[in-house]
Length: 178
Image 1 (cartoon, helix red, strand yellow):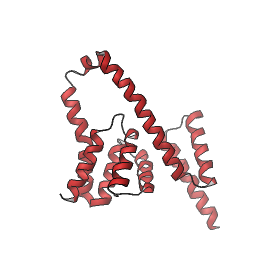
Image 2 (tube, helix red, strand yellow):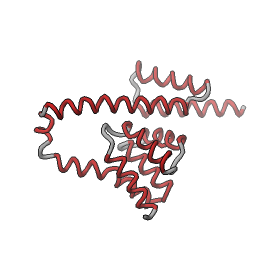
Image 3 (cartoon, helix red, strand yellow):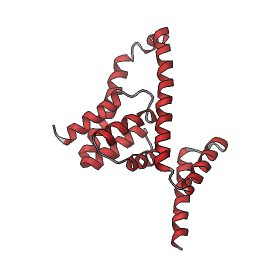
Image 4 (tube, rainbow, N blue to C red):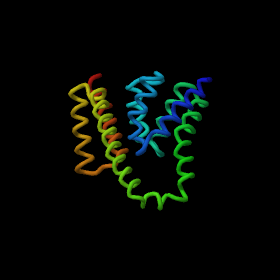
């Protein structure tokens, strides 16, 4: 199978087995892209999530596009982007006609309530793993706490918080060069 074919299969699997959107994909991205395929490093995944958060569009698509491009250029980016979207598109198109009826079913409703809790646990686990990797210095810990405070108390947008954190990193770099 060609490298673009392998990229397509990897991202199709990620798209097929993820419930809950971009952040719920984090554990699958880690397993498939870092541990199984070795396409990117853990730091690259963190960078892709950071940059993807600042760009328009769905974060999972941005991560797929960045990874595909890194591995195989434009053709890899196209393969990854199409593949991560295709499962959702097919499933939603198939269910569109019966969706309201489906959610009225008590079993389905309770199943999705359980899925939501499971997705939250997956996201929290990934946050802990990313925290351990990304917050390695005292300065990074201060930025982390400051960003949390800005999010919780001032309700700043994700883009504003990421840009402020980037600015803090640049200031620290400039001060270290003086």
